[in-house]
Image 1 (cartoon, rainbow, N blue to C red):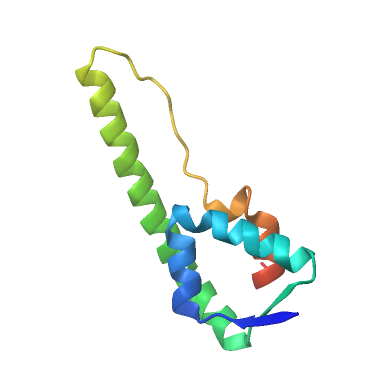
Image 2 (image 1 turned 120 degrees about the vertical axis):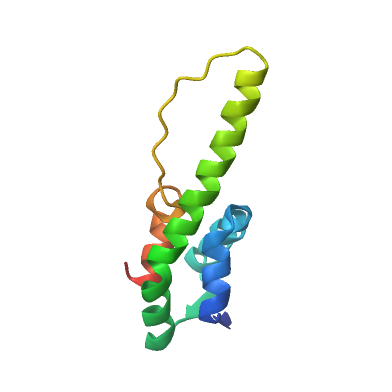
Length: 105
């Protein structure tokens, strides 16, 4: 079994970048298969929890900007866009199980 120790700054980068969610799902699969164990000292958990609100805000801002750009493009090309979007952090949907197992959220 491979044992990983991943620093807080790496966890934060993974959480901020939606492109990394594929990696997180793969890591989750490897953990469930017993091929990988992620070691998390209490300090890393504390640092991640302390930064969690900033991560959510960063993702919210990024998503809002992308949606605004998409709306502007649709408006420019004569299509209507009347959807209301609610931000959902990555760990509250498909990555919820993984982050619970990692961070005991």
